[in-house]
Image (cartoon, rainbow, N blue to C red; front, side, top):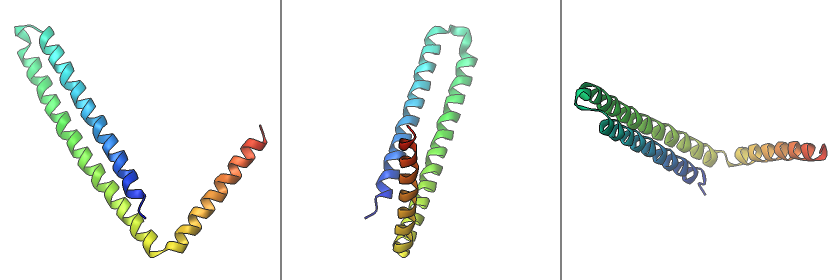
Length: 110
């Protein structure tokens, strides 16, 4: 009955995978920089590692915040649909009719 929650879960998982890929790419870049630099670049490596940690912390905070917002929005929508099923169906029907009319007009002009 609740198709919204799995949809958001899928998007949340995709976002999490993208963030993890970004962090992995940053780590690979840092390894490459470390391999290319000499002994005199210790301070730069330390600064890069600090930036990496800050980036990871920020991404983790963004992930948690987006998860909380999406979960709250999904719960609110689900609660509204359960409390007002006929209004929800009417809204969906109106959106479907409008979309169908737009598509019909667009195809008839081709």
